[in-house]
Length: 212
Image (cartoon, rainbow, N blue to C red; front, side, top):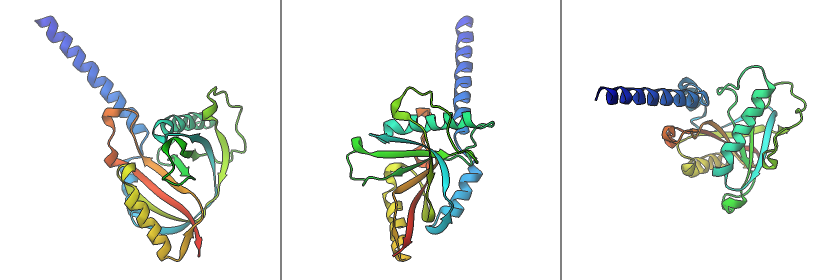
């Protein structure tokens, strides 16, 4: 009996250790709650602002983003980590995606253009040693200028009303959309299913706009 108790204690300790390690890894992919709270303050209402163009590390995928998004973002962060001395900061390196096709497109034909901000001053990428031809990283300049933005908190599947609210705001301001739907993922799916909470996803929706 004593041996069983000891074994159970060891197993419990190992489980706590594993959970603690996975929780720490999960947190490393997310900005502090104070940063997310600031997003609510700054992006909780639709608004139009000027954004400078930005150099981005980019991967384009064709197919189900639920299957391809995670590997694409992990690949981008891996390349980003190799390009700079310090690890990527979740407070400044939030991944983004642009969706150039209509949302009614069959999911197997969706085009996702995934990106993270490139290190300042980067002009070219070193040779890509990745063997996966579907995960080729490119350096691109994303054009911005005048954009409309709004924060969505919750599952991606419930973005519809938030997107509609932003589109209505753009129309009310006498503007029109001149680019693809863009999303900036400040807090998204966990790499560990047992820690995932779609209600805590923080996503900025964005459109390039111009006066009509």
